[in-house]
Length: 330
Ligand SMILES: O=C(O)CCC(=O)C(=O)O
Ligand SMILES: [Fe+2]
Image (tube, rainbow, N blue to C red; front, side):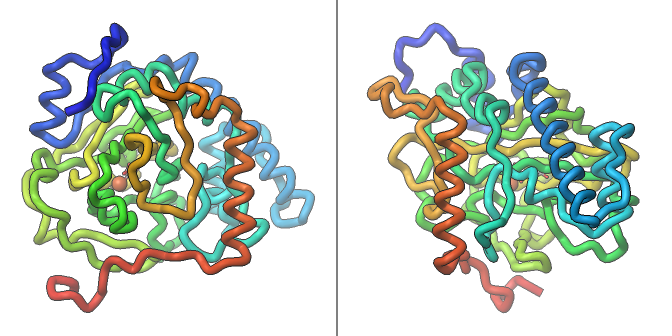
């Protein structure tokens, strides 16, 4: 499956790798170090939310900034008491359309360190080899309880549940031959109650399924084309879910009273197409050419800023892969 160098640092067993090949997914328990990999990200996001709420308050958009509440409670207040969008300012990517010079996003040192976590990259290497590119198709999803969302809240999978899809179906065709590995990890525990992931084991072996456009600039695989038995994947902070780009997956609804907070990241071998050519990825690890690695979070942030400047004055090439009128789409 991958070009293994003589590397002693291989956190995943052969049995786990075989499971991934056969089933299309793998949950690696306790792969990350909660204190080293996740806690700094939590602190960074708490500080970022402070800044966002203080700015909204200063602009008169909110009367109070709920300083005494926890991160999750503040997120929940935002959706239940305002129509302000917290998801884009906290996301680690730009949106697919309507980018302006002031579209907010987040690129801090803690999340950059997580993208380059040696614990994570050691495992990623076992799937795709030692030449590792951080694919820019990446998101944070901080999902409040659905009961707090306004009625008729449009589908936005950064905020509410994610419809059935294969990741290959939501990126540009140019990357169909790329070996893109999806890496999903949670900051809060992910349970069946708060909206954990659901995968269809062995669904990766078929072709790319039909996806149909739905409200909110989104697409979904029609229920009738889900080939297999869906399996919920509850996870704890530190666990990592790996998926292929053709593994069918969705997320459950958050019917708990707390937030469900996750990151989904992707990696591919250096040189392969990413599926969003207008977004900036970077070399996370290269054994052949270590000087190519990016080590500075500021450089990473500047790459996204440059992309934003470009997209603000050039039309975003939104992929039009799926047709609502296709046979099989209602
Ligand atoms: O976290 C979610 O709800 C969806 C994540 C996802 O689709 C992915 O990781 O590819
Ligand atoms: Fe996905």
